[in-house]
Amino acid sequence: MHDMTFWWDASLRQFIFPGWNVVSLGGFLGVCLLLACLAIFYEVLKVHHIFIRLQSLRHSQIQSPRPQCAPPSGESDTLLTDPPPTVVFGSPQARKIIQLAKEALVFLFHTTLGYFLMLAVMMYNGFVFLTVVSALTLAYFFLGHISMRLHMEHIRARHLRVTCSHRCPSDPQASDTPRDMSPSTS
Image (cartoon, rainbow, N blue to C red; front, side, top):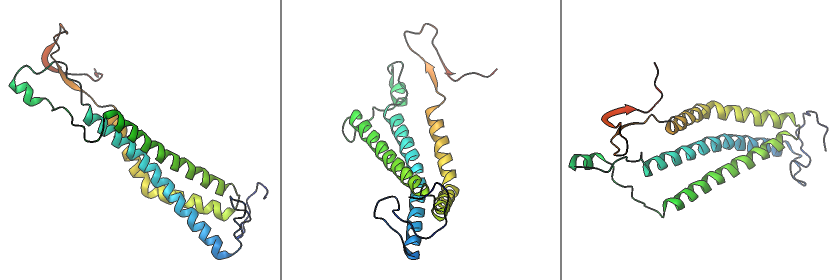
């Protein structure tokens, strides 16, 4: 066991697991390369998790479009409405459970990998620390803009402006002119 201060040596005794001793320079470089690849994969999983959530949101918006207020009253109204969605694989509840399971698995791998990298850094070896931090920085440099773009697309998809015509028979003030349902700016 080491003190809680950084040390700079190419040998790692009991690295994370008991019995994993790295005593040669080649083994140490191999461990650093492995940790760098895992750190890059950590960032890839982060972007992939955002992508899966966005894909789920897109799919739910396709499956359940904006609710129709009044049933179609004529031929032109029928042509303007979307056809009912077809279910390709199982029920909508089964698809939702499968999607949640995919999200949970990616979250599990991402979190486990993050804690593994944290344990490697907590060995207080300066070279291991620099390897993990440099690899994470490099991965963020190349994937950060994708992550931000997916986050913004996810936010936009969740907060759509809905413009619809109010032709509900139960609404006494309904008109055929479209109204913007977003907050107005005066």
